Length: 474
Image (cartoon, rainbow, N blue to C red):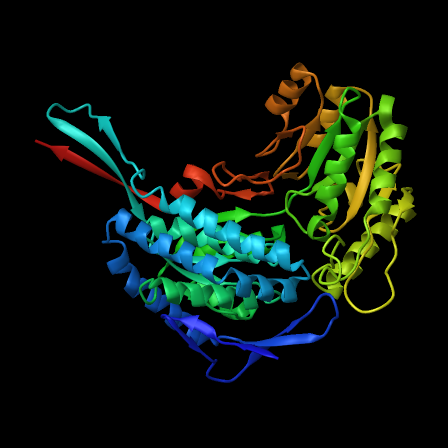
C-alpha cells in the first residue's frame, strides 16, 4: 500500500503524532494509500517557512522565477507517468486521461512562466506639476491554495504557477480524496530545484486547514470548491482581511435552438455530462430545448446517453468512470428520486448499480420544471435535466433565473441569436456551438454565487498581486 508524507520546506516528513488519512479507490472501494495528516503545529510551521522563503523569492527578477518554473514544467513531464498513475488510482480516471492532466499542468506552468516580462504597472498623470504617479504590482506574500478532487493535478498548477511567477510562496492543501498525485508533484518540485519553503503541500483535517487560512502571514486564500466551502473561506478571510479567489458552484445551461446542428449538440452535451462522471464545474447541468425540436433532441440525448457505458476505465478507457465516493453517489441518487417524486420523467438511468465502486449510470430526466431542485442545485454527476422553451427571450430568462453563473452554452447557426445570448447571459463564460473547456489564456471567473476573482490568463495571474502607488515629486 502506498504511504505518503507531507512536503514542508522541501522535505517529506510524517506527522509528529503519526496520524494519517486513508485514501480509497472509487473503482473498488478498497484502501489504496495512507497519507500523513499534518498537525496544527506542523501546518503553521509550513506557513512560517513559506513566509521566510518568500522574502528572498520576491527579490528575484521575474525572469529568474520563470527559469525555475520552466524547470518545474520539465520535471512534471519527466514524472508525468508516475503522476498519472497516482491520479488514475485515486480518482478512477483512465491512465491516459490522468497522464494527459499532468501534461496540461506542465503546459499551464509554462504559460504563466511566460508572463515574466509582461507583469506591468502603470504611469498615471498627476494633478501636481513635476510629479509622476507610479502604480506597481507586488506579490501578496503567502497564498493558501485549496485544491478540489475532480482535476487535482491541473488545478494545483493552475493556482501555484501564477502565484510563483508573481513572487508569492504557497501552502497547498490537496483534497483528502486525491492527495497522492499532489505528492508526486512535490517530487517534481524537488527535481526542479525550487527553493525550499516556496511550495509546501500538506494533507490535513478541516480544523488544521482553518488554522492555516487564518494564520497572520497568509495574505490570500484561493479555493476551487463548493459554495459551502467558499462561505467558510470568506469566514477565514475575515480574520486577516485576506484576499479571496473563489471558483464555486456551477450549473451550466445549454440553450438548443431549432436551427442548431442537433447531432453535434447532443454529442457534445452527453460528452460534457459524462466526462469524469459529470464531476466538472463547467459541465452542462441543465438543457433548454426549443419546443419545435424538443422531442427530436430528447431522442438524440436518450440514444447517445444509452450508448455511454460505465465501468473500470483501467479495463476499458472508453467507459465512464466512478463518482469520487459513496456519499456523492447517495446524494446524487436522492436528488434524482426527489425529482421523479416532483414530476420529472426518468428516461434513462436513475439507479444505484450493484457491485464494488461508486458508479452511477448516465441519467436523463425530462418534463422538468425551473423550480425543481434538480434544476436549481448543482448535481456534479452524470444526471441531465431537460426543459422546454418557446423563444430565445424565454430561454434567456430561464437560464438567468439562477443562483449560479459560471459557464453557459448556446447552439445556433444564427449569429444574431448567438450574439443576443452572448450579450445577455448572466455567466462568466459563454460557449457558442461547443461545450466549456477553460482555455488557460482566457479568464475563468464566475458571476453570482459561482465565485469571486478567477483563474487563468493575464487577469488570473494579476489576482495574485497587490498594488503600490509611488508618488514621485521632482
